[in-house]
Amino acid sequence: MVKGAVLTLLWLFSFKSRRRLALPPGPSALPIIGNVLQMDKRAPFKTMLKLSDKYGSVMTMYLGPQRTVILLGYDAVKEALVDQADDFTGRGPIPLLFKASKGYGLGVSNGECWQQLRRFTLTTLRDFGMGRKGMEEWIQEESSHLVGCITKMNAKPFDPTFFLSCTVSNVICCLVFGQRFSYDDKHFLYLLQIISDTLKFGSSSQGQLYNIFPRLMEWLPGSHHNVFAKLEEMRAFIMNKIQEHQDRLDASSPRDYIDCFLLRLNQEKHIPISQFHYDNLVSTVLNLYLAGTETTSSTIRYALNVLIKYPKIQETIQQEIDTVVGQRCPCMEDKKSLPYTDAVLHEIQRFLDIIPLSIPHYALHDISFRGYTIPKDTLIIPLLHSVLKDEKRWTTPWSFNPQHFLDNNGNFKKNPAFLPFSAGKRSCVGESLARMEIFLFLVSLLQHFTFSCPGGPDSIDLSPEYSGFANVPRRYTIIATPR
Image (cartoon, rainbow, N blue to C red; front, side, top):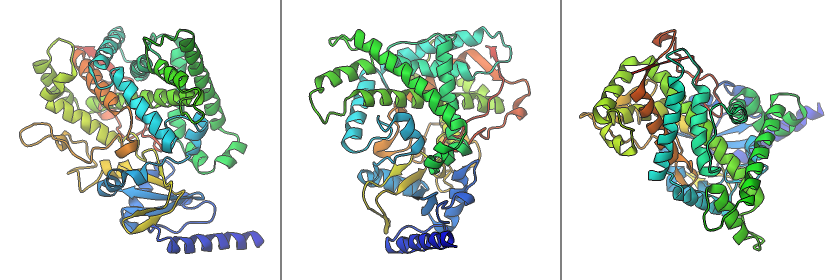
């Protein structure tokens, strides 16, 4: 009886607070659990999109006790992340990310720490070739290893998942660690499995519950304990690599991201408030390694699923590649001469919608937005799913359609609602690298192989295997027939 009265009072207080603070509208929430019972456990972003039909493009929900404002559609997301960028740079203490990074690193930091780490990371990655010719050559070299491995399959059915993970991860490894790993390196494959398992956990209902009720979940048994234990192994691997770099550090010739960070750390070691310290290095490297491996490799794997599903699209791309590139190694300069290929690759990213919820933002202070007040400590979700499927911005948002990126003359055309990497000051730091990888790897693969699967095109299901934090593509055994 007393508990019921307390819960009722909490609910009434929440209701009155919403009115007083001029919060955006939203569905009624239960005490403690909020709107959790209303959410589609398999795809929470679908519930949010459906509720927006009633409550509009700026909506308040409660994920457990956490007050959350959802931004839906291109106009609202762009207005917040770009037009009011300074107000929306905050990153909330997302429990899963916070525990994995121990509260340090680029992914979860705010204020001066975030600004310094982001500026340093962008500058350093660019210096080592991200978006430039040097990185292009690394990707071309890795493409040759990938083609070689697939050629050895002799047109027999195989699962491409780990080949693609190795390929993409090696690009990150060159940038961060200054080395690549063999595709049959068992420890390397083990680390890639940890990354894959972490993404799947984050997209599972248990992962979502951990983010909503972290203290409760810590007391309960479940796969989350195993995931965090494996992430500790990943951190140990990174710390070992950092130690190797410290032992061989040459101030006159930094080899990679870790070397550059260590040099900056040494320069500022006497500055008490410096953000360049060991904990930030370990967690930022973990951020780059996790984020730069699975999302890009999953996108390329999904691209192969799409091309098998639509063999005529695959054939048209190959004809364009044969005409423009021929047998030589593809390069980024070819992109402007491959408009159909470019359009298909953009549509693959739009349709996959790899991170539908984006990585949530956070109100570091009270924010005025569209006549509403978003109070300090509110979680903010710019729903990228609603942007990439915005019916006002795409002619056929729920169908795979490369014409979204082609004009009447067959030339590539941009669409401002193409935001798979988010937008604004917290957009993905590796966007230019991911774009380069997706283009060069897939053009190289289609130059050398025609892809199919034992069950034929109709056996391919393009809906995700897991949905939550990420839309994880289904895994298929495929056939790569040399051309």
